[in-house]
Length: 112
Ligand code: AMP
Ligand code: ZN
Image (cartoon, rainbow, N blue to C red; front, side, top):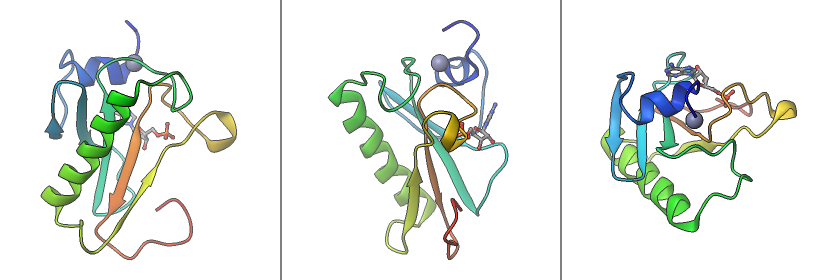
């Protein structure tokens, strides 16, 4: 999608603060972090959200990226949260599938 900010970041048309990358997925730091670690795991292909026909291979790559991010950030053992805001009632603001990986502190009952 030509006007999608996460398409541009995931495909390096705009550079960001990347934490992990492979053929299908990128992970980069959220520009408005809600916790010491707040990384977005984003597929390189455009899907509006998690119920937009995302191939199993891409979902598996995203799960692998979560694992890699958690290892790199040192939060794999202490625990972290993965959030996929989906649609208006969840407050999704960027309509390109992304998983928030949030951790590095004791999290509240809210999103972060
Ligand atoms: P959501 O409410 O799940 O759609 O969250 C979108 C997230 O993307 C927010 O946490 C924003 O801070 C983050 N965000 C938006 N634009 C950028 C950007 N250009 N680089 C990094 N993070 C971004
Ligand atoms: Zn996109």
